[in-house]
Image (cartoon, rainbow, N blue to C red; front, side):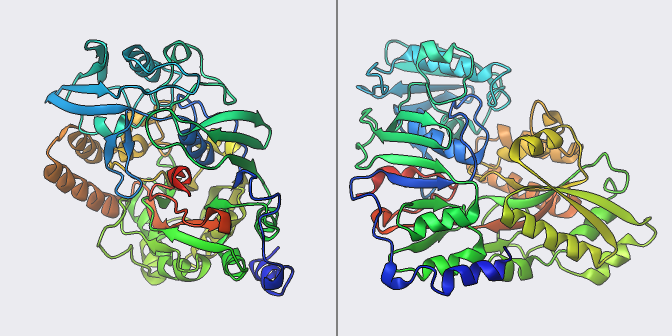
Length: 488
């Protein structure tokens, strides 16, 4: 269904204001959170898909938690933390914290969890490579020992803590692991994850049960809101649908500026794309201002580089300059991989049209998540429309751009190999002074803008559709659903 038809579908009265949603199912039903992709695991050792990751953080919690507004690391299951020197961090555990099973959190759980994260099968193994060991320090504290200065350890201690016996088990699909988060799992079935409030001693017990429901069709997701069955959806409806949703009495659309960035991954193994002038030409052909104002309904900001909230002007749009950079280059036909999400496919088509206007032919390949990830990790693409996870800590850029993090070790899927970029990433990881680190990352971002190892596009707001029952909910700047636990 075309975007204009979808707007008409909502605005011409399929559900009128007089038939506003009234919370089908009664006031005691769980709050329904809608996602578009199937949640196959919430095991924090291996979870990777965005919605699954967000659901996992409702069930699991770490020693530290990221503040939902500032993303600064604060004590969570920990009572306090203190650097002993630049290689040793002592963390004292909070008293009386319990897993959902009732087991008290102790130092053995922390030691076993970080041993699990360092194993090769964990998605976090590269993150914790600088971690040499974790040792108990008495009955209520642990000491993290690093093999080198590593400035991002505090943010990384947001990683969930598992029960010791389960941490030593193999990663699992499903949702069977004990947790420290505000919700416990009561049922896990295809397309549904049922959660109930739990009091673990970390924060106040939530007031509402939750049901995380997978609805793969976008129109069906919209209809669940219009019929009063759904309560929250974060980044799950196309911008074109939002005005019609917002006009329905009782429903609201709320947004926050995000720390993510949408970008074009570039395969540097491609002979033409290895040339900077060709990457510059592709970047110059993209009208970021026009796309964010029209296709994204103003709910995004054109990107200057990869870091959020920067003040530099966005990458320039100049089709004539793009054509100049392409002079002497044989005609290009490039594949563009994207997910099969409708809004992403629409964006990919618009980008293909813009590139065709400067002489570059783009063949769009839309794939479901698992196949897309396999193609990306195998280097079977020319360009790919991807979203860098929310940048709560700039060190995450290394996972996507450092030459040591080519798959399977990391997510440098375009095989970027830039010694200067590697050096800046390494220096940023090791610099403990916040002001010096900030200056390093500003230089890194400036280097990305000129060398274009990837092509930044725009920062999309996190946009939530909210029912009257979930009034007051906002997504965090990193897109997480942590404020669900605080709803009255």
